[in-house]
Structures are given as structure tokens and as C-alpha cells.
Length: 85
View: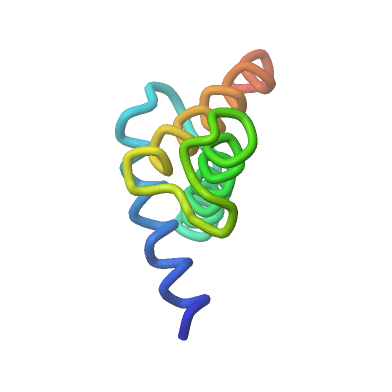
């Protein structure tokens, strides 16, 4: 049940990030969920190891997760900007 909840939260975070990021974004709802999960993991890693905002084992909140997903989407746009039609 935990992984279902993780995917649902990731899906919501991914959708919010897609709405905030201009341009075409990759994939459907599965990719959106994976981008949201990856954004949350990125935000948690940065918060724990770089900014020291969270204790080890603590996860990022909603806002940080959305920011992490937006960063990933912007990186995607920078890497694949010439390949998009």
C-alpha cells in the first residue's frame, strides 16, 4: 500500500510541475508520476545533503517536491530542446 501512495503523491506532484513548466513534457500519467517521485527524491537529497534542511530519513514536503520536479522538467527541456518538433 505504501508504494501505491508514493505513486499517487508523485502523480500529483508531477501534474503540478507540468502545469508550472512551459513547453511540451514527456510521456503520459506514468511518466508524470515517475517525474514527481524523482523530483521528491531530488528535493529530499538536496535538503538532507546540500542544504541540511532535513534530518537523515526525513523526506521533503510538497513544495520542495514540486520544485524538484520542475527542476527535472527544465533539465529535460534543456537536454532535448533541439529534438522537439
